[in-house]
Amino acid sequence: MTLSCPSVRRRLSPLLGRLSPLLGRLFARRIVLAATLVLLLVVIVAVAYPWLSGVDPNAMHPSLRLRAPNAGHWAGTDELGRDVMSRIVYGARYSLLIGFMTAAGAVLLGTALGILAGFFRRVDGLLMRIVDAMMSFPDILLGIALVSIFGGSLWNVILALVIVYTPRVARVVRASTLVLKELLFVDAARALGVRTHGILLRHILPNLISPILVQATFCFAHAILAEAALSFLGVGVPPEIPTWGTMIAGSIEYSDRAFWTIFSPGLAIVVTALALQVLGDGVRDMLDPKLKRAT
Amino acid sequence: MLRFLIVRLAGALLVLALVAVIVFMLTRLAAGDPVALLLGDQASIADIAKVRAQYGLDQPLPAQFVLWLGQLLHGNLGQSLFLQQPVTQALLDRAEPTLLLAFFAVAIAALIGIPAGMAAAIWRGSAADQVFSSLAMLGASVPSFWLGLTLIQVFAVKLGWFPSSGYGDPTASFGERLQHLLLPAIVLGLVNSALIIRFTRAAMLDILGEDYVRTARAKGLAEGTVMFKHVLRNSLVPIVTVLGLTMAVMIGGTVVTETVFNLPGVGNLVVRAVLRRDYPVIQGALLVIAAIYVFINFSIDIIYTLVDPRIRLETSA
Image 1 (cartoon, rainbow over the protein chains, first blue to last red):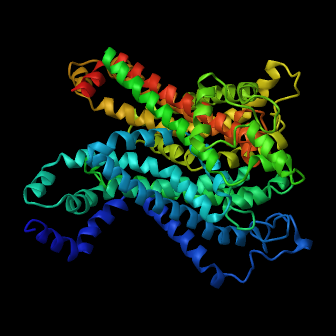
Image 2 (cartoon, rainbow over the protein chains, first blue to last red):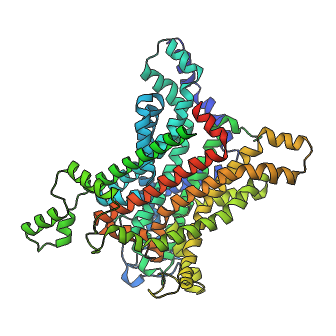
Image 3 (tube, chains in turn purple, cyan):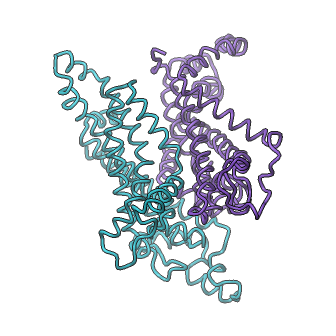
């Protein structure tokens, strides 16, 4: 107890003071700063869309169908005469929701399983063999099998993707836990009488933040890509929900005549996924003491 | 060494057994009744019961599992509900495009990824490193089906350099079939080169930091000799590993690409099976693909230990 009190105080009071040098290091690479700004922009535009534009993303204008990009419709119109640009912005809400929920779910479950496997030898063997077994299925293949079982709805796709990515997170967290539990401060805490759950929550978990954050950004990016692939294969989110994936899937028949209906939603995926991965890489560099470079 | 082999083999077999359990559970948990789907809504209850009995679907779950596993060990993956042929045959019929596609894609990915990753590591921090590392990140952010659709538009539709889809007519020569595989292989190779660039770069950087590299430099060897004799040769093991892993991942990655290019491969088969709930086909394909993955992983493990005795020492210590 005496050991954890000062550490709690230190953690609470000058949180910002400790955070700012970290952020400074994170944004020292300009590309990471750019990626963060892009992500912020995507989120803000997606959330604020109804206040920014009066164009209804679902309004159909049969007379305006399959128009190439022009001044009135920056990204053209699709096969039902809907404005592609406003659908991309509107679709961002769903694509980001799927990415975020998948990352959150996989990180929560994967962290819990990974800590258990890393800390308790008795469950480790079986748990990791199950993780190995899950990871021997290619992610898209496991994804379509799961969605076909659950049925194609927004939340079922998220559930399927959580199941796909949880083992990946669990494996990384387990590896870090194995290293952490051998360190002196864990022995010290135990010697001072801290209970096992206290060690796990107060001593192991906070030290796992770095790998967890990195995994979260990568899961986020991969989930957006996987959702698009599932929708493209026809086993994803129902077509009436405009995600970037369903937009491409819906216009696929018109790809020869109106390629912009497919190109621009895809570009939105690329930009978002790229920004997320750059940010993930930046976080890894920031939190990894071995990589403290000249920056 | 023998003990190590046995332990690893037992581990791989355990994973395979778990894979079988997962595959079985997945398809049995599914909501739709395949038999009702197969017979249509005109079928009588008695008809449905008869077909269910025929496929063993009327037995309790554990009994179904034992039945299925027994057949499995005889190489029998069951009968497709829709294709009127055994699953094994359906998979074999469609293996050629998938295996060739995976092979060419790995070759392309390696041709791009290994030199780029090496250059990025050797000239770390240089413009080349930044370009290749950014390309690697970009490759990991591009949906392969979208890249495929885009390249079809540019190179097949606009320029007419490649056939846009399919695998040629059934009588097409091997050369013609290869022509149909070229663009899909480029797409899959480009996307997967990202992984190889990152991995090669990391492996090379590890080795560049080793003591023996410093020693080689300290004793005055020419930089070229250090690179080729000490760094390159030692980085071959991790690079071969990532090639094996890419091959394993690729077989799953072909699912999407085959659909984009309408190639009659295993991936295409699975997607169709999923859309009409053809459980035996889904089961069989998942099982075979996962087994290939486990096998490749196991082989890599063994090769790794044969080539680098340090790993064995670490695990036995």
